[in-house]
Image (cartoon, rainbow over all chains, first blue to last red):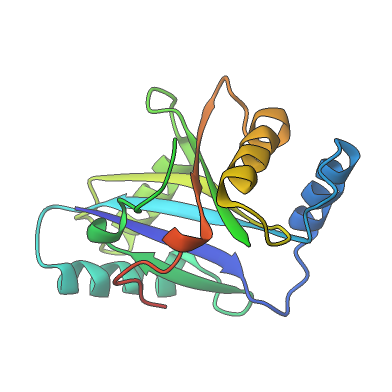
Length: 89
Length: 89
């Protein structure tokens, strides 16, 4: 079972990397970008089991290691969510 | 309109950061993790417009700057996909 963890800076925290990328995009002509934030995606593969248990374990991983609770928020997306209706590759 | 870009190493490429995180998790007792990959999530905010146009522009940003086509794959998820059915915060 795959669990996707998205780790992003909390809204109030200055995202220096995002600002640099936004500026670089503007330099390439993509000046319509009004905001851009960069975060991490961590895809965790677990043995098959219950969704609730996987969510609980991965939440614990986030609290202990994957996210810095002072600066970052995290979001979990379970396997069922990972086939978005219109995603393109 | 928000577009989410997921940038991940291509499947054949060794993910050193992911291996380090997996090992650290095992050291904390999370030894059930069978695989773990780390990538980037980039959230791009664009003025309201057509989905097709936004997808085309952000795809162009990926090809020119956001992803390294030699090592990385990217996936776009449009605003409509960004409310997954069971995501938790």
